[in-house]
Amino acid sequence: MPRSDLDTGKLDYQSSDKVIITIELKRRKVEPGGLFGKAKGGQVMRTLIYKRTHTGDPDKNGRFGIHDCMRSVRTWGFEAVIGVGGSSAEPESHGLARKVNWIGIGPHKRPAAGKPGLIVTFDHFLLFESDGPSFPELAPKLANRMYSKNVRKVMNSLDRKELGEVGNILALAKDAPPSSAGGAGRVKISNKCVPLTPSAKAIKSCSS
Image 1 (tube, rainbow, N blue to C red):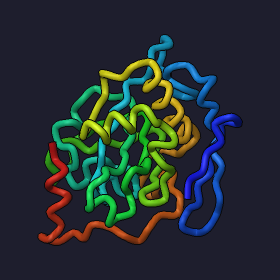
Image 2 (tube, rainbow, N blue to C red; image 1 turned 45 degrees about the horizontal axis):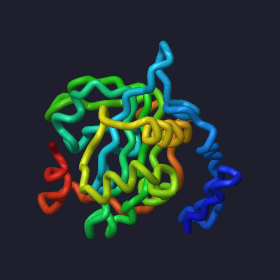
Image 3 (cartoon, rainbow, N blue to C red; image 1 turned 120 degrees about the horizontal axis):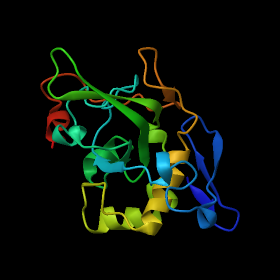
Image 4 (cartoon, one colour; image 1 turned 90 degrees about the vertical axis):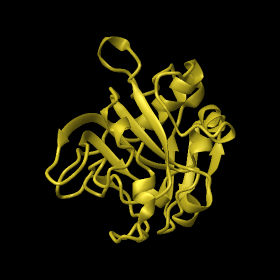
């Protein structure tokens, strides 16, 4: 269960292997863009934040779009991506709901044979899936906006406080390895996945 101490700027959460992990937030002292949220020239890194319903895209190798999730959105000009679990029954069933599921920083986009749209890989990729920290704990204002107003995705319309929250989340992946065939930055995750069968309609339904 997540627990936070806003005075010390720490968030603890317990992963599925019962290990307590402490994240240094420093939330009250971070400027917009957070600890690791600024691109060259001091501009805040343009970050796509979107809600997910299932596991499997991106895959464990850090390939976003491997099942064509968020189809047209993958062409947007983002510099980082944060995938968070939605609040409906489906993400709840996969253990993703209201958690930070994955983070990608420094995208590289390319077509892939036999795959629609672009495959996106990252300079830094961190996959949490069901073991991710609470999104409302890390970004209370942005989480409230996305869940209370049923916002599916957001990138350009973030205010100063929301940008600071995004920066704090990006900081978690600043030392993560790149997407690769051998796997990327990854914590122990649930064995749950979306099967690659005709019944896996959730993968198609997430296209946009």
